[in-house]
Image 1 (cartoon, helix red, strand yellow):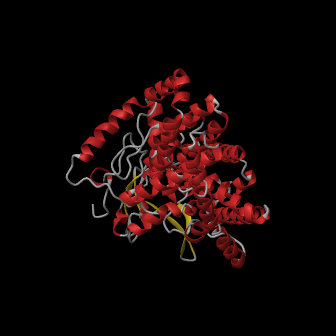
Image 2 (tube, rainbow, N blue to C red; image 1 turned 60 degrees about the horizontal axis):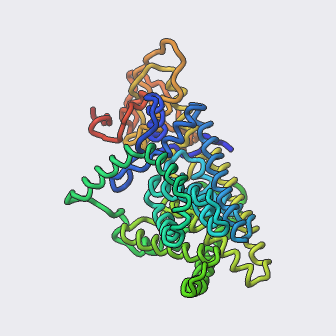
Length: 494
């Protein structure tokens, strides 16, 4: 639905441009973008975009392919996990239709690939504990390695699962060592340049006196400490409808849907209670030197993951925004499933069915309504263009030979890559083009109010410069481009 309506801001254009140039060089990407602490992320997301670019350069088709891939893998992971542990499978729809989950499946980002990877990892882990199938162990190991490489925020999920397998199932690793070694060899081939880059960067960061290993939220660590219990930020629709896109329709229905979606929080908290209540049985099995049930083992691991997340978020002062729960998506989704199980236990299965149906209905309303809002009115956040907005501007620019234009869109002052990356993917038709020298890139206005559409206007040479405008380079984004104002920004004063 309306693939061009995805946000297209800072990291996404750079990832696609990097994939484009690695394809031009006929080699797989060896690193991703750099994170908040100056350490590069893994190359797998860029490599995936390289594959997708091998099929098409159409930006909106990339969104469709990426969204289908991520939604399919996440769905498989959630349904597989629920089936393995005997949980209510159709509750997965309440998670899959959550507006943030839908949005982050579609956005051409890198960190959000941890959503499907984590879902598959946890599902394979639960299946292995139940069946001891070798291929489940192999898939789990593959995901365990890729998760923190993709983004370090996945460590609270990957580390406890990996520790549990190593501690309790070393024999299975040894019996399947040849297959596991082949998996590790392939991963090493794809990542050996990345490993060297990370080692060098980490050494440099740790030896600098001013190295920062905290987020800006360090003045209010209470929010970071509470974050592990706020995984509902990613799985509900309240914040999305409030700050990103309010659903169309009667306001009272929208308010009911937003308030109803908040029920995901207590559902997850009930899941934490349900998982913690199985710790006694898990410890008893260990004392008796017997094998814990797969359900108890998964519950104990989830509590360990939650504890790890608490420590990590508190230590690094990580903000509680939805985008910081990508790596632990599977943890909070699993706790939500367990919360429905707890409700079922106390209501003879009626309550869980009712809560599930209500959450599904609320999330479908917010998601579809929010998508309609974005399509017809744009995002709530001012100056937040969609891919379609930028694509329309690029197609207009393709009619000219101008390399520099005037614009008053503040985002492009520091981040011109939304336009410049699309000029790589959507080049102009062959042939000479006129050079106007006074083009103005701005949001279209209707009755004096900005709309989401970006238009290119021809200014006369005698017309005054539009207020708040500055010069912007609109040539295709060059290889290895980084947002360094000293090398690319052209201030209006010059």
